[in-house]
Image 1: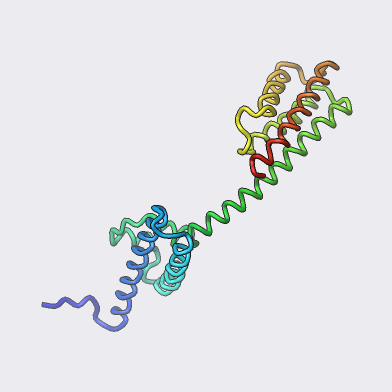
Image 2: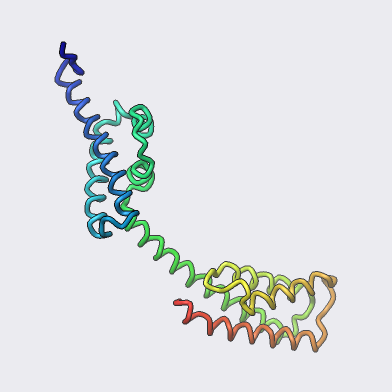
Length: 209
C-alpha cells in the first residue's frame, strides 16, 4: 500500500521544499569538508558556496512560517552537519570571504597598534625631556607603552622594549608615587626608551608591516 506524504498540492510543495533544504544543507557540509581538505580550489569553493548560500536564503525565507528554526530542522532530521549550519546560518558568507575580511581587519588593526606604540614611545621620551620624573607621572606612560607593545603580536615575547618596560615598571612599583627618578635613572630610562624605539622600528619591516 502506497503511503502519501501529502494530502494536497500545498503540502506536496512543502515537503518538496523540505527535501531541497535538506539537500542544500548536506551539499554545503560536503563542500566545507572538501575545502578544508584541499580537495577543491578556493575559487571553485567560493563560487559553489555563494550559490548554495543564495539558494538557502531564498528557501529559508519561503519556509520561514513552516521552518522557523533551521537548527531545529537540522536536529529533527538528525543531519549532523555542523559546518553547514555555521556557513549557512551563522556566517552567511563563504570561508574565503571571511578569511579575506579577517586579514584586512588584522592588517588595519596592526597598523593602528603600531601607530599607538610610536605615539606612546614619543610621549614617554618627551615627558622625560620636560623633566616629568615623578613616579606617578612616569608609571602611567610606561604602562601604556608596555600595554600597546603587548598588543602587537608580531613582536616576540622577549622583544627588548617589552623586557625593559617590564623591568622599569617593576622598579617604579616599589617606589612611592611622589618619589622622583634621579638624574642618572632618568637618563638611563631615556636611553632604554630610545634604544627600544629603534629596535621596534627595525623590527617592523621584517615583520611585514
